[in-house]
Image (cartoon, rainbow, N blue to C red; front, side):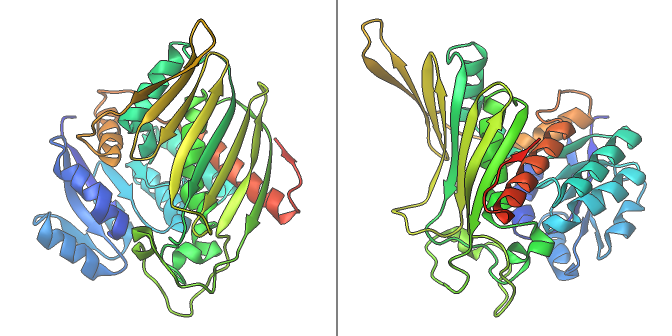
Length: 356
């Protein structure tokens, strides 16, 4: 297969801002169908980008098109697993925006359907494709950090609540707040850099302090569809600890709104040979000792020609074409949803440890 025919399901902000530009630059992908419950959004994307694409309002109608090889799911979180399962039944490969699903049960259904269909399942892990992430992964695999025993995964904003009152802040539709929205990125990146060790236990605490605060100073606050006087029953901050069976520990903190100096996004790793700090949109800083015991820094800042999303989507297309190995295994996605779900369970029980 040289050309993969794609149907996009959900033509909102993430599709227009990240996925569609990636497909436009990929010579091995062709968008042949667009679907959205707000059919006008699909029609607008058709007129602007894909004149020959079919437009659907119901995703089941799109899945019935036997000429489509794969679907890209960019819907609200609660639909990810539901649509993926139906797509596998229809014989399609599946790329899905994060998170994989809103519960362990839904993630397991998704994983089982992919195995049964013998089709590719990939969920967006775009941070793994950041040039600085790839450099740091290579650095670690050359054993230049030694034993990584502590990690910190942080993404916190001052005021950046997305789609306030809409599906982002409605637990039944999103699965949670910044933990499942931002934490899935940062916890996954740290975990992947550490080599995906087995989880032993987690603890977590969540807070909701800014549901009635409409201040915003981040472009992320304009992401998603706001609903005046809508629902806000998720956390706006989550923090806690993940313990691994190899003895390593990860601390995490994610927030949509906090009284801090500025937005921060980083992963720190403490190794026995060196340490490292990955900064979102920035650089890697490697910390190491000289033979005389003095600390030195090595700063790496790779220029980025292709976006993280574009590289992730290119990997998916190449895997479907049989030209590449996947950066992501569905079992890793299932494990990530188990981690996030256990953190929420811990928070609901006063921060008590949840063992795996």
